[in-house]
Each structure stands twice: as C-alpha cells, then as structure tokens.
Amino acid sequence: AQSVTQLGSHVSVSEGALVLLRCNYSSSVPPYLFWYVQYPNQGLQLLLKYTSAATLVKGINGFEAEFKKSETSFHLTKPSAHMSDAAEYFCAVSESSSNTGKLIFGQGTTLQVKP
Amino acid sequence: DAGVTQSPTHLIKTRGQHVTLRCSPISGHKSVSWYQQVLGQGPQFIFQYYEKEERGRGNFPDRFSARQFPNYSSELNVNALLLGDSALYLCASSIRQGGGYTFGSGTRLTVV
Picture (spheres, chains in turn green, red):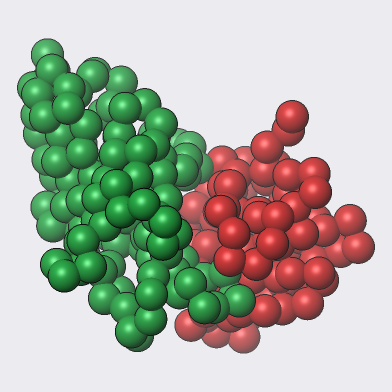
C-alpha cells in the first residue's frame, strides 16, 4: 500500500531564508509524486510533479523538489522564502501503473514566514 | 479559461439529511475525482470517474455515491448525514486517468 509522511506539521522560516519541507513516501511500484499548496479557504494548487522523467523537478513560484529513490524522499525546497509563501503544503503519491487516479496525501505542513 | 467549478461553496445541513454537491471540470477534461478534507488533515480519496464510469473508490461507506454525466460534470451525493461528514469536499479534473489533477475551490459542508 502507498503512503506519504510529511515530517513536521509546522515549519517556520524568516523571510529570505531557505524553505525545506520534507516528504517521504512508500510505494511498491514506481510512483508519481506531487506537491500541492493550499491557501486558507481555497482548493489545492499544483506546485510541481514527478512522473519518472528528470529527478530534479522545477515548479511554480520558485519551488523545486528532488526525487531520491534510495531515500524514498521528495523534499520541497525554495532558496528564499517570501511572505506570500505562507500556506499549507501537501505531498501526494499515486501509482504510475494505476488507472484509478487516486492520490494519497500526507497530513500537510503549515509554512509560516516571519518578517 | 474557467477552472474546475464547484457548487455550492458553502452548505449547512442537519444530521440525517441528504446533500448533493456539484462539479464542472475544465473543458476537455474527462476524469473527475472527489476528495474529502477534514479540518487539519490531508484530502482523502472518495471516488474517481472517467468516461462516465466509476474507476476508483476510496474507503467510504455506501452513504457516499457519485455519478458523471455525458458532459463530464459530476455529482457527489451523501445520504443520512453524520456530524463527521463535516468537511471540505474537493473535486479534481484531469484530461485522462492518472494525469495531472486540477482542483476546484471546494464545497464547505457543515453538518449540525
């Protein structure tokens, strides 16, 4: 069975500092991996996705993530945090061989950006 | 272009009642998925429909049902509402099964 673990329910950084949000996954088949962001009272916005091409994936708003199979990780980074990055971030996994379209989400990490 | 549209945006129902939530996918998207997001948790998969057929079902009771129409829009129905059904219900659409998913803003359901 697939699962996702996001380490740290809350992460706080200063504006301009490095953002690192951790995600580890479990999957018995090659996974597709996603990072979504959710602002208050809104739906989910796709930041980036890994679908077995390049292991370093660049997304929107300066975010990127690296797929590391040996570590079963897909951590999200951004070199310099901006106040507008404060939001809830979700890592998700799906089976590349599946036709169900089912995404398994982690519990989420709240990013706080301090001025 | 319009994104994924969900209606209503907010809804208050009483325990035991029935509710219908609606979703219009992005034009050209044939796959629709439904998720339940309880406050403070990640979304949980409920259903996926593709070409009007159910292609996936999550671990939810039979009180939850859905369907997809010929224009690819979808309805999620929940019968005999419980307090625990209070959540944000999210709809996501994709061009095909297993593709990238675009989410709507959700319907906030409160059961009292």
